[in-house]
Length: 517
Image (cartoon, rainbow, N blue to C red; front, side):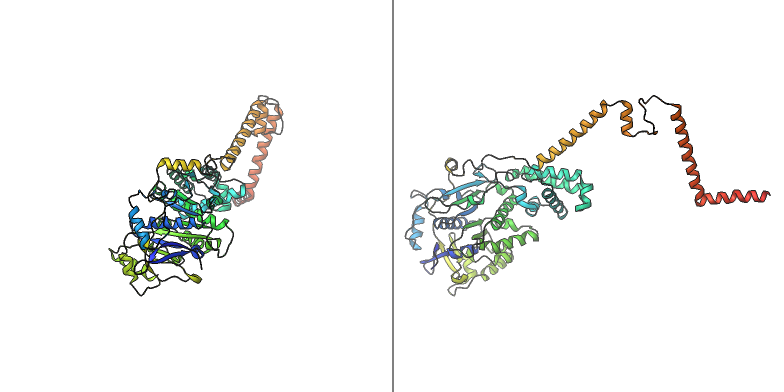
């Protein structure tokens, strides 16, 4: 029988243990419910369960509460009696307090180790989504990436992309013949969006050293999976950056990890909190990419769990792939809410003891309607479940405690100092400097020449006779010039006489002569 992560107690008296089978944990899941119904605690106890089973976890701490995973709960805590009472009610006999191995990360480098990737690794599709570009602007961004590949211009940070866009604008006439129209207005619009991203602090995401995915998939000395916590409370001020970064991370896991089939337990579990941000106003190409990743990444041993308020926030094609579900209470104040509630209830395997729709509406805080995959991946019967209490601290740790954990982390020093090796910006700047130097040398050489030699080289006049001084004018030269002028005039007259008008003039002159006779 598969090992399970204990979630809580179900049945009439909440005495029947409900668990998530590790063998099916990579088939993705959903944690949904209205604000204040207990989604964060459910996320916390699942992270604890996966870590205890030796499965590394990555999650985003949107509200700042999940840092408590790094610290053991306490008998002196306010909710100690409530926790122990609930543990007894659901048959959690070995309940106790414990801390878990945690590694803190932060895109801004303030509350955790810095997280970086390169512009090239992000790719034009996700970058266009991040910058909210139009179709035409996205096309130019694709051209920039193609030119960078063909010309050997590494795109590592934002200044590389900014420099390349300037170069594209300066050479747009030549490049447009090959790649299509390069509008100066569109290039300027991309540059403005890059400036907005910089002002939001997004420039820190791009650069080196880039995040090594292996650093997210580690266990501690006791075999417990590390819980990687991304500080996202500040990041949520830029929701596009938050969603794009998490999607990039999922894409990198999908592309880099080898196939493992159906493992006994996942290699990594990825929690995507505030999942609706990923799909709000997302273009179809991006939604298709998420669907592809969700469908195929389970074969890489990665389980993805979306956390959102309503299942309606997730596109149907993706929602259908989320087999493990924890549904907290949904509010039904409007007709749309009631419709979403009914649709959510219809996705569960019915339990004859109660109405699923009513249960979703009625469950209290810390209680949920659950359905987990069972043998052969069949969804289990829906059950009202009382969620178990967490073993780690409920609520955030202090700043001093966080700093101490960061200082003691084995990741300390690896990502703290950014690297700035030669890339597109430096290469293009060097090319411009070389061209300017060559032009300056040519100008200096011209200044050192004799005036006549400069005039001769610049081809401002040519007589066929090379002179030593521009003031010397020989008679021969004058005659030659006059002869050349006369010859040129003769050629013009002959050309005109050969034309239609010329022939009419000749006929008129000859006719007059014959009449005179």
